[in-house]
Length: 233
Image (cartoon, rainbow, N blue to C red; front, side):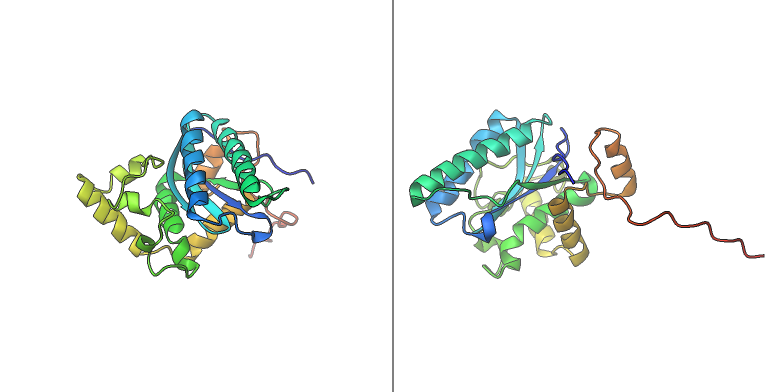
């Protein structure tokens, strides 16, 4: 069966996962992390993509972003992926692929999942047992949202601005939001939707989104249609 094209729609938040091939490390030094962040910042600006949240793990990374144009996202990811592989292979004196195939992505219902996805991203190093809290991990956007440092890559979504009337109020509200965690069902939904490429949201959102693209955005129900049940007299 032919692979579905990636779902990329302007004006909607997308959650992205890009993994190293065979889960291999894609960073070997702090310079590698900084190089990828510089690439992301440059290409996000050139391709008109707003990066809301990110985390760079040792063998994969997550992004939450909104493209202004539908082609902006694939252009950005292609440019970042190609340039980083060239840099990494040259530095490590290696050849061949670095990525585990294509990046994975899903379109999210903003009101239902955007802030949950941000917390999901920030808590990745905690779930992996790498740090005790998200504030202890240097390669994510968490520090930007909690006022520790300004991150030029990050472009906050309007939902973040609604978390408080002052910078201090927003930072405190976001910190509390992340500390409250993401329940298991939401974590699984975000992971499954991103890896499968299906849109994530309530039925009305998915139905409306389907009208905007010819690409199928939800999994078909398996099996034959159920037979009508006989009426009980």
